[in-house]
Length: 226
Ligand SMILES: *Cc1c(COP(=O)(O)O)cnc(C)c1O
Image 1 (cartoon, rainbow, N blue to C red):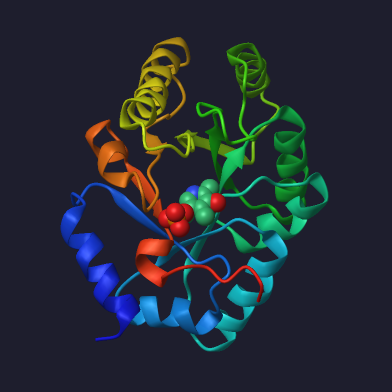
Image 2 (cartoon, protein in one colour; image 1 turned 90 degrees about the vertical axis):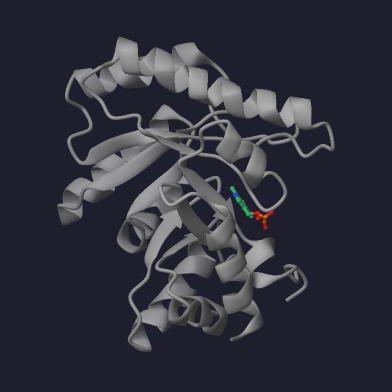
């Protein structure tokens, strides 16, 4: 068994069966993704659309068919490509992005799953910072503006700190937000809570994560100079 497959096995043994694993392959080559697929992994996450498009097109040409989630902050001019390659965009953090996703999806008659990224940690810059902005978006859904978009829940990145109480607080905030929105907007599905990375996924699971996004603990350190 390869290094990647060993890591994958270890992680799958430590997370509960009902928690989905998104293997974050950013900065790692197509062959690493294929290695993970040979170890049984199907779902991957990437945060840069151009890198992901080139890599995942290559993987498909090799005859492998992974599922891809976009997890990084997304510029409007990358949405067309994102919609082509991904089944879910986890990093929806503003209304304009939804408008563009709707536009691009309607062109190709594709339904896109989304998570609303919520800013809960001081260090991360992305994510909705106001609940009012999110409520406006929900009004747009109720008005029928987003027929090609399917809400699945929320995503967050905890602050990058040794202070586990702070990390935990960020995750419990997301869980409470889901509770609140499930009551306010009962016709929508907020079941997914995408939270937890290599350094904090155990805490995230304790706080109710349904989806962990793990890169380093599967593929090893990223080489940003490549
Ligand atoms: C890179 C990244 C991850 C994975 O981080 P690791 O610490 O390598 O597990 C998870 N979520 C997002 C949004 C990322 O950009």
